[in-house]
Amino acid sequence: MSESKSNDFFHKPAVRSVLPFVNGGISGMVATTVVQPIDMVKVRIQLAGEGTAGGPKPTALSVTRQIVSSGKVLDLYTGLSAGLLRQAIYTTARLGFFEKFMIAVNTRAKAQGTKVGFAERAAAGLSAGGIAAFIGNPCDLALIRMQSDGLKPVAERANYKNVIDALVRITQNEGVTSLWAGCWPTVVRAMALNFGQLAFFSEAKAQFETHTNWSLKTRTLAASAVAGFFASFFSLPFDFVKTRLQKQTKGPKGELHYNGMMDCFKKVAQQEGIGRFYRGFGTYYVRIAPHAMITLLVLDYLGFLTK
Image (tube, rainbow, N blue to C red):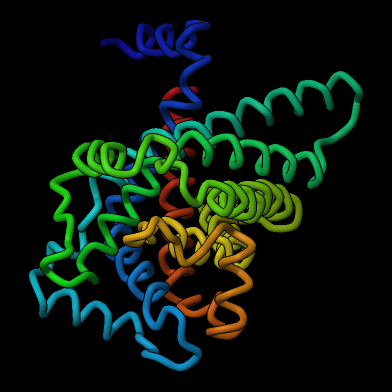
């Protein structure tokens, strides 16, 4: 296909309307493939010592060693199918909606002769993240179930084959609504993450463009690193609660240890200490920052290819 024909294709109205969503999904899936082992370790750290103030204090290295020694290196990629499907749905939606919202905000600002400010960028990020998280929650739940399955006694493990098998079996055993377990902390986490990632990325790029002479690639890389830090800081407590809620299953009498987001926050704070919400921040940042950087860099590159 010639360059002119390619450009004509990408500039068709129908194609332009879906490109933000397609580019967003591809970017997220590439990033997830790279950081999946870190995500696996992060989840295991969050589930360690549940219900006790003391308990084990695992490190990323000790958890990695345990996973590898009890199985094989590829066990670090447990749940990859769920992670990819989640990105295909969640990241496609959040980055696509964010770009759509930003186009609308920029159009309005241009018509009014003003500039888009941080508040508008933040509102776009929060809205896009919340909507996308609600849509993608079933895949998020399947990912947590697959990653935590290895912590159970061998006889109690579900041994999910893939994300479709997990979703079908969870639905059959617990009902369709169970796929939205932990939905609210997932939504709040996504809003916090997107506030940190998208709003600060957009703001940092604008600030670097104004106050530095760096190249576009350098500005993008630096802005994505800044975005990764703030995304981690704002979202980790909600990610922690989300993991705990999505991991739990009903007991013999239908009881659950946590009755919701606020109950989980309360019990963890009382039983394990407030600091537990930020346990593994380093691992979480190493998971979030590269994911944010890879996602945003690939997104920028795809945007360049399809402009």
